[in-house]
Length: 175
Image (tube, one colour):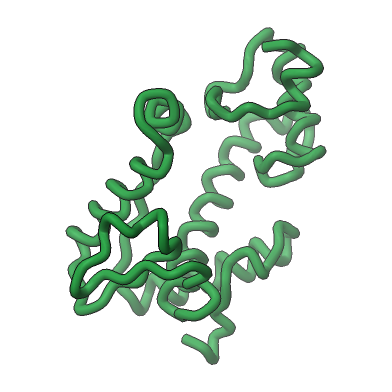
């Protein structure tokens, strides 16, 4: 995998070139290694944020994948976050995506799927808003879209995490 250029998915950036590189690598990884991706809705994230914690959601989701794809050794990215899952064959390390090719590969698979799904969301708004830049992350470009949606529809987009306290929106729209 190292010769493929596998590295932490964030290193590719959010440009179109970075997305294409990630997608190409994700295709190679998916063809050679068994994997599982669990997509979690914004509603479910919101529910966990308000009822328990986002960390707990991440832990139970990781446990589902571990149980689905048993391995001799599992490395998770986040020492404190995944400490409850550590056992004889599961280790949790900070910055594991920088130190373990398997974790970097998993981050590429996940980020590539996120890019794909966000692209589908963008497609549905392209004719009325134009290009949605910013990748859906909390940045100026994404804020432009969220502001447009909020002013034109009177509510936040359905896919938006309502539990995410974005100061820029609180100050402008007092939601």
